[in-house]
Image (cartoon, rainbow, N blue to C red):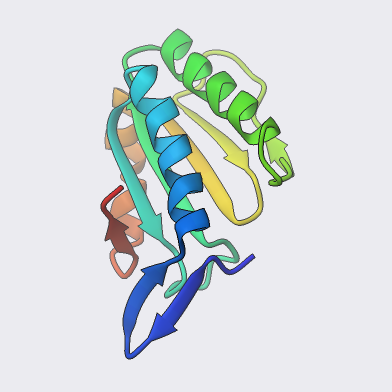
Length: 126
């Protein structure tokens, strides 16, 4: 699921792709996710199109963020490949194929610094 079109080195998202990313971004904002970051992973070796990375203020908060996105994905054509169902983790993941969501506690995000591992990935403004 390559959601991007490349023309002259500039990345363009079609309107459907923009709507889908915006839908997930808005859902995270509505649940008060912190420091929401969307990475375009097309320039990396990772077999996905986008990473969503965000933080929550507690284990309960990141579980609520995860559950909200699971619900949002179920309303789309995306398929959830797998997701963390555990409790009290500093990092939870949803793999929806073309989009992977990462939910961190503040402590977990600082420790793992996932966005720093993908310095070549473009940061998208949603």
